[in-house]
Length: 392
Image 1 (cartoon, rainbow, N blue to C red):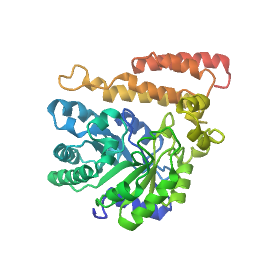
Image 2: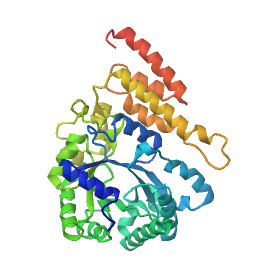
Image 3: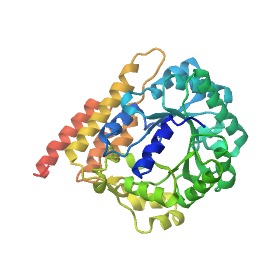
Image 4: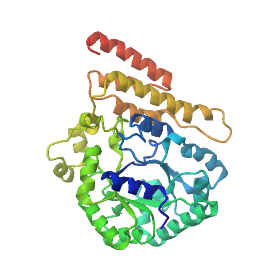
């Protein structure tokens, strides 16, 4: 186990001192890029006393890709970060011990605060490579991968911690086997998404299994920090789930969409997600497609009392930052490709909801191809909105 000066141990000390769990932003593919992380860090005021945002994650990055010249040129874009995003954990995936070792050396040399191994992603293309959630079915390979990451860090001459993010099992909960196995691998932190691979996100997260994971951790690896993940809607909910399960921290994912103010304690009383009556029961009974239709967008995102003008300003800021950092530097680049601006559209859907005319605004934003067009759409919407509402 790493020494007490690693980021995880520092956060543990802070958590024990404050009496509050560690809160992390979950890694999400084509979401938690540097532009998004900078927006979240700024508007959740990371590092300030009133902020509950403790640590960030990169998107997952292919170890195999990092070990090939052409792939490395493109994937280094996904590993770009600034000091304002610290502490920051780089997440890797792969099933080849040698490329995981090489990739870990590369990442460690970039001075990340830690390396996390993705052993829970249910994407079929990732699983075909034997990575992600497929690792749950091959613990012997998973063990080699963890050791390879440790070896890669050692090769770099650095000393940063290794963590794992996974699910409670593949077809069914495997707390006594899979989770125990990971805890026995001498890792600094383990994040458990409280669903199986088979369940995807079709049913409510089973937070009772996190309590079981904590008990397993207490027995076999008391020095490993354990994080719960799944269906956490805000920091109040995170605190409640941590208290109920006994886990050290909570990872929040989808609730952050359209709400970069989520971790600011001055906003949490005004940022509540609407829940359906008996939502947990309905989630186990109804097909996912039916539940989505019943819930609609108004139940999907948090409801904000952030002034519309500020929401629009941050939306434009996000689009401009995405373009500046992840598109423009790669135009005409001979060996690397920037991201597609369409990635931003999932964010536009989340920013533009819960007010009169939101649907029409979303439709217009879906047609944009750059930040200038986004700004123009917002400007025109504001003009028409003012004409309809004097109190804008």
